[in-house]
View: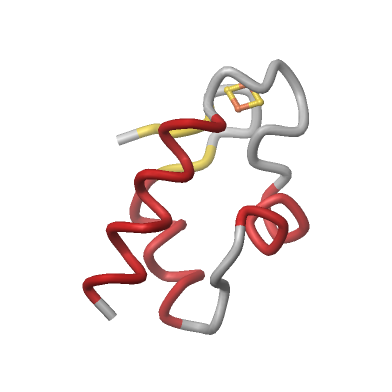
Length: 56
Ligand code: FES
């Protein structure tokens, strides 16, 4: 499922990134540009990030 439409980033990509060490929104923004355009995905991306961190 897409989390960030502007950058075409999916929840799977985010959990993969977390597996390889990403742990903050800044990491996701640097890696994929999540939230760097319209910003609408920020809340959802944060939820996905936190879920992935807890599942780690
Ligand atoms: Fe992520 Fe627009 S949907 S920046």
